[in-house]
Amino acid sequence: MAASLALLAPPAIAGPETAPPVRAVVEMFTSQGCSACLPADRLTGEFSREPGLLSLTVPVTYWDYLGWKDTLADHAFDERQRAYAVQNRLPQLATPQAVVSGRDLIPGSDRTRLSRLVAESGPLPVRVKVCERNERIVIDVEAQATAWPAEIWLVPVARSRPVAIGHGANEGRVAVYANVVRGFHRVGTWSGAATRLELSRAITHVNGADGYAVLLQTGGVSRAGRIIGAAKGPGL
Image (cartoon, rainbow, N blue to C red; front, side):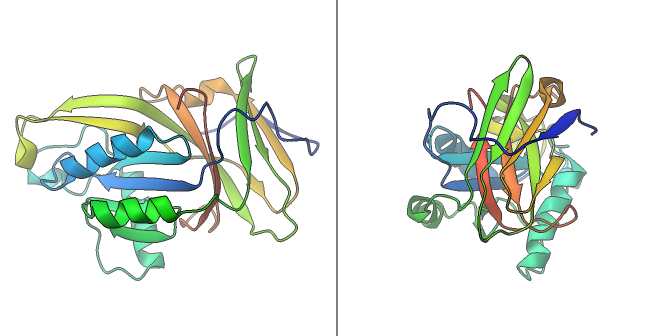
């Protein structure tokens, strides 16, 4: 998706310090057709209420053949999970699966291990800030003397989405999803210098999204690498 953006001179980090830095990003790969996913989906909702944690629901399509087509899934999300699997030499995809900061892949059903990993996570190494000014989104990424080349991604999300599941393994149940990803949009690159991007708020008005997050992720456009910085948009 094309974005209207401008790369400006290196600034100070935008806006007042109103929220703690994001210490970890949890991507929960899930499916409405997965019998084991609903407890993991509830855990994602709990994580979404933690100020220093960015928790994202990422619905996949590869269980659609079992009798219920996931109403929120996107094939691009399958490919993102596949990129993580290849990077970590995993032979197959599965749900629920949690990916913590693009680095640790663990079963999303392992609540104890996932909660411990998140609790032990320190702040992400690169500070990212986001704010809004006159219907523009302003993203600031701090300078780092030792830098990893990385991509800047804008991630529109639907903050809460209930779904009544009509068929399949979860027939008759209502799943309530938190921070459902509605797309991953590459909006810039970062190579260690202080960087500011400005783009239209309209880029987030897609597929029912009513919020957004920002990720700073290594690995280039075609594969998912380590997440080294992140920020929550207003209200997330």
